[in-house]
Image (tube, rainbow, N blue to C red; front, side, top):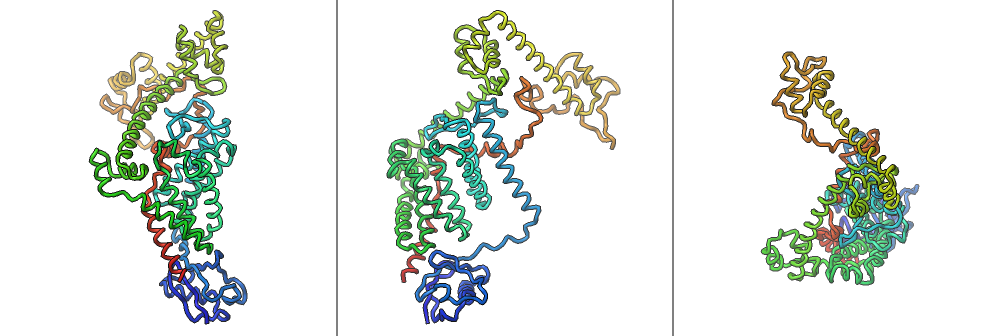
Amino acid sequence: MAKLKIGGTWAGVVEEVDLHAWTLAMLRDCVAERSNSPSQSINLICAGKILRDDAVPPQTLSQLGIKNNAKILATRASSPQQGISLVAQEERCSRLARIRAAATAMAERHSDGALPIEDFNIEVEDQSGQKVRLGSETDQRAVMMGLMLHAKGKKLIKQGNYKDALEVLSMGEESFSLCDSKVIELIDNVPILQIDMVWCYFMIRDIRWLADAGKRLEIARIGIERAHGKDSLRLRLLQGGRFPELALHLRLELLEGVVAYHTGQLEKSRKALASARAKFEQLQVSDEALSFVMSMGYVERDAKRALRMNNQDVGGAIDFLAEEKAKKLQKREEDVRRRNEIKEQKRYGMTPLKKAVDLERLNELVSIGFDKELAAEALRQNENDTQKALDDLTNPETNSALQVAIESRKRKRQKQAKDYEIEKVVRMGFDRARVVAAFEAGGGVEQVLLRLTAQPGIEPNTDSTGTSNGGATSSAPLPNNVNSDDHLNTTDEVEDSKTERDKEMEDELSADIAKADALADYDIEVNVEGEAITEYLALLQTASH
């Protein structure tokens, strides 16, 4: 009779096992009974392989290669989702498709210098907050899309939605793969994405991903060392001697230890988990240090983050928090400045190749005495070529043509504004002919409404059911921003009205990346990791006896 050491869902020793008579089903039933779990939910793993009993007739444990004192891991498979309707599954697939489509559309719009539809630009920055351009336009688009999808994946992880997070992270991985490898080998976003994917595998507890997890972790470790330098020396220099990556390395080592355990590499697992535990202890914040930093006016979460990233040094943590506050203020000011720039660029319209007018080149022309609006038109027509724009500005004939184009656009803008306001009032239920006549008499929307409601017998039209299509009285609330020209196209090319945008999803993606900061990828609460380290060290202890 043999003994089998079981770990995982149930930990203990199954004695008096006849390896030549017992089948896998009999062992599974035994473990299921002792763990109080359904037999069909139990998976058994030995030497890194999932044990299967689909042969006819069933093979004995001996025929499956199981020997006396073999170590077997028992896991409880995720139960199939019950009651999820086909409609719900379709909605999930639709949402994932919307995420991909929105990220693709935004990356295309923001990577090539085109005038953005939104009032913001998406730009790639390094950890110091400096704008960077990576490789070609194709590379920039691929990186931008990968970063957006990675940010969305991390948001889903925080929400505990690991399956959807895996799908979105896979999309991000695919996007990064379209980029020249030389361009992205010195950034750590790709290896961090690999770690995030394996973390999802771990949280789902699906052993089918075991082999894939090991490969991803190897890629992650190589990529992290290449980006951060040997022993993170490059990162340490960039971060002024700080330790922002400690929690990330803890998670990496934990996952390496888990994969090693499940593939029977117990000594490798023990070393990885021991290193992870040391980092976990290093990341524990003392009550005294936390209390001191919080007494300086910082909230608990920010204080903990600062202490963890500064190796528990209180002075360094306070300096770090002051620097982060200054960076956030500078970022807000930069965002306001950029929004104003985009608003200005929209007034000038787009070049024939759908690019925005280059404001830096525009200011150069203004600095030597040219009218700003005239100079902008010259740059717009000449694809931001300063010399050609200068030639047009100094040539009386082309200069005159530029002025005509500006006046034509102004008239077009005025007509668009008027048409827009007419449509607003018509949608309130008034007769179009009367609305047009009221606008012809002059005045803005409020004056037109007063004029329409002051005329006896004139009320908003009703629809076929006899209900009013809007309460158009002098006290009726006007639509927000009715006098704003934000809805107008300064040129025909600013936004193709036939192009449908998923604004809701695009806003969701832009909010995800707006909330992130340069150190967001390293900002990990390690409570779950700490519990997992304890769990697997206990499994190792059981396996060694």
